[in-house]
Image (cartoon, rainbow, N blue to C red; front, top):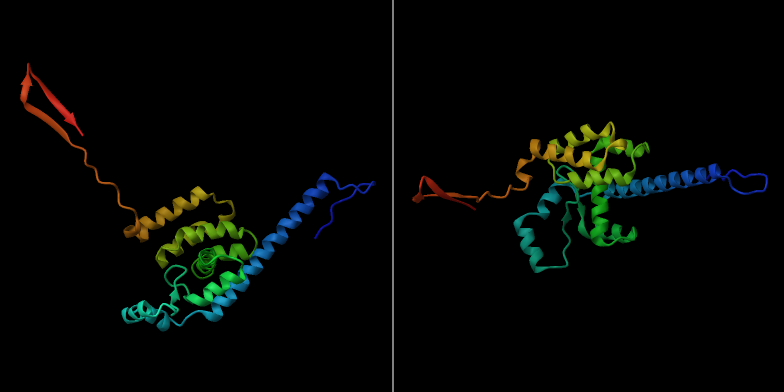
Amino acid sequence: MRKALLTCDDSPTPVGLVAAVRAAAEVKKQAALTEAYAVLEWVAARQLPEDRAAEEWADDHLDEMAKDRFGSQALHLAGPGAPVVEEDEAYEIAAALGLSRQSGSRYVGELIELRYRRPRIWSRVTALDLPLWKARKIAAATCTLPEAGAAYVDAQLAWAAGRTTLAQIDRTVDEAMVRFAPDLLPEAPSDHRDVIVDLDNAKHGLVSIDAL
């Protein structure tokens, strides 16, 4: 870590203090990335085979799970095409990270989403061009998209992800939803407005109009 620049009376200068803060921030970013690497190494080593993951969701297995609540099932923490992990082992990782089951599962899922479904954006993270927290925002917003939609968001945002605002991320995700997953869009509220024209009680050429 850089040391603050000192004056002749050994007092840190403003420039030196800013440099020290910047160096500490770089150390923090690198530490977050190192942790992410470790989690993803665990995912690569412990992901379930495709046939096992599919079997976990079979009706017979779900019936068995209802009888035996101590069983462990597959956790689909990211979108389609991403690795699937064992429930119990995922919770162990959450505990190792000092997170609750819910927070730990969300964190691991976002890393899986980035590594396996956002390769361009992930490369920006590993190059320290994009903060991990911002990349995770993108991952969280897109985990329900099909693979084509995920690839679209990856291509649209990766080139300038570091400068992309959260509003731009939301707009890009909305575009991907419309193009690749319109069935996931919320339904528009029904329009129940009515206009009633009462011709029976017209007087002097005037009619009564009621609008609801």
